[in-house]
Length: 454
Image 1: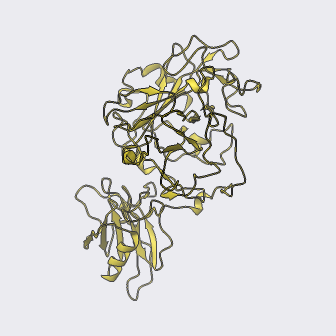
Image 2: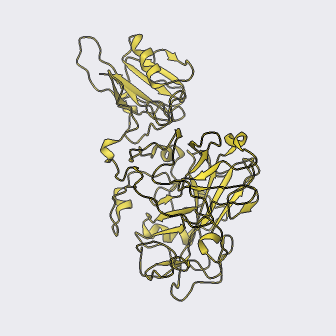
Image 3: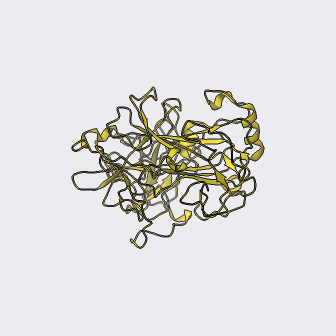
């Protein structure tokens, strides 16, 4: 994904070098808002973690995307884009397609996926977390791959816009496929269905007087769990990034009811580690993790039931940083130079010096320990273990690895050497020898980062 990528070109297929999707051929973009916890004590915000669904293995969370065939469908054309939902909704109306296309499931446990569903956010604690669910329109005009507002035109609030390219099926709602497409949009396309599990359990003790403490990142809160539920502004984006022939073949051949990629011979599976390694540093100069005094962007909390309004001029960044200007590797530690990320097999140790596990690990603790004891390299793994050494196997280094998890003792925004899998490595110079850049990293299950003094 790139904020500046052009329209009407095969950008995703030609420029993408990796993907967090489990199918290698699929380089589509999928997006939905982030859920935040808002402290009832001081009003600050903290991002709610996602977790994998019960049948998806153990990738670094994310959403599950279903392509569902309702009768005979036409697969998405190249560069097709659309949006489901309306970020400004703060009340439910059965006459609005965007309202009917969204539900939330209050999961009863961590494994079954069972629980009651509501159109608004759950108003009680959920033992297995909250699963957000959204359906996209299934009717296309057969001509336009995108329109200026990307939106379904049978929403009364946008009905005056004549160029909308998609609509929901007549009478459709979440779980109800409707009675066919309107004559203005006669082409049936696959039903895209997104579901994302949010780990709300760590905040179970933060409910005050029965009021939910959660708010969506566009400022959509659960106002009062006793009287008013919202979450109606939940929405999602889709940008088609499949090779057209592969998607057509997969849609015609892969009809397993369980939806398992392994049962579809038309596509190639990607490993969980490859998915996890496809990460991009934050390209907006703004904090999104840790404790925040306000939601990212110009997104103040706006209660319903009236529609929210777009807010500008709040001082939030309006430009993105160049990809060459961002990195998961810390470059701000005096005397040390980031080297990269590497992978080590089970039982393998690329840094053969002592290990250091003081608790509440930080990048600085690790570098200070290794440097004080005279070692050339320092690396972190498992978010908590520091390793030292004087040599490394450079063949284990790869730019395709992402060192993107914070150490246990560092704030979430200090993503650097301690990482889930790859290990950023840092090096310091040997006495009387010119500094050289050595590349180090750690393993798949370990995942880490390394730094070296320069």
